[in-house]
Length: 536
Image 1 (cartoon, rainbow, N blue to C red):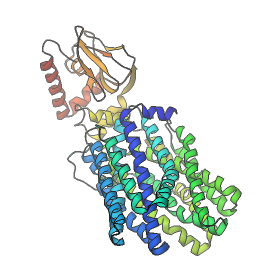
Image 2 (image 1 turned 135 degrees about the vertical axis):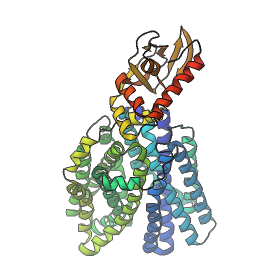
Image 3 (image 1 turned 180 degrees about the horizontal axis):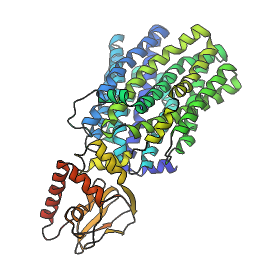
Image 4 (image 1 turned 180 degrees about the vertical axis):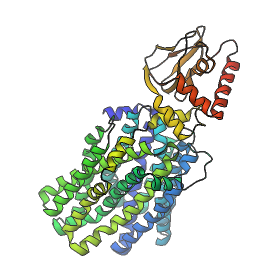
């Protein structure tokens, strides 16, 4: 509840996560509906082909389209993503309900699956800029993981109800409405300016993955997770029919047990909030996954199968949340959307590989070996990673929340990523209670302040001039011109600030001509606007 409250109290994060509920419901619901439609037409073969048709275009499209979240305001890109998804799902629903040729419906479904890849990269670039503290960023990632786990249980059930009373076309129509609702929910979110406005290099994220071993390793681990997830649909059928004698319906029960384990894993992921080191829980989650499937394959028993699958589901959510949070910490701010777009593309391709892996293992070595093989995917990825995992934990201390806040300030926007990161490490967090004075008119000034949350009132000679909110800053006049504070700033509500000392502030401004120009422009505007009453 503490984690949930932390996210709910941030209005913008609350909107992003509510929309994410709609996104996950639509993603899983239409996936099942289209596979059911294909299976009814041509059995398992056609269903498998349709799955590949949906996944492969998305795998190629995701890394390229993800650059939108870096080059344009990520909040606007996220809203656009929901609208595009809604349009593609509506077109597919219309095709299915009108009885159009199957190839038309399959092509439209592939467009819808491709549009889905826009959402997560844009959200990954937006959330660090909306979080007020590093703990809030991790909490948001944790809540996103919970939403995905609960969707694994709820969305298939909802799709089953809709299929029982209607058809796959009805599922697509309802999910299109959910996607549109998600777009309406996130539309009011302002968000930061683009982190890489004007950049036209679509391959920077690929070069980062090639040149940075830590990023490449995390992308590989998360792709290995997707391989394992892609294999599960067949694994559940093998377990239910061949190993446990539960019949075809047993596959659904086993799937639900795995999803329920992810929901139970909420307790484990809640402990990630505030942790500096995330590799230990990531390793623990991967080992829980592996041990559960190896034990299940070695001795398949109905009495223990559901418990083992719940353990595996809990391990998966820990791996996913810890891995994505680490990737968010080490990826450059101006490449976040593209890095996560690359991950989205890899995940789509890995899901397709996983869907082919289990039948191959069954054909070669039998059902038990297939279950054990799926369990070995994540532990094997850990073994290949070796000691480099520890290097990731040591490096993954980039202050991504502070970086995003600084980048949103016009004063520091011209600085490059290395300068911004250096400056972000100098920031000191502080809280101000309602009524507390942060600076007082006439006193010496040694600090520059950036507002992360709350409201503060600026006054001169007792007269209120304006209100400062998240994304505003103050204190630069005293530092730039070596004068006493020109106004009083008092917290009107509980406020969260980041303070920067004089030396690193002046060094940063002096190091970049555009930053120095922006600083003088801002000071000039405030002096001109204040006339006899000068605002800091």
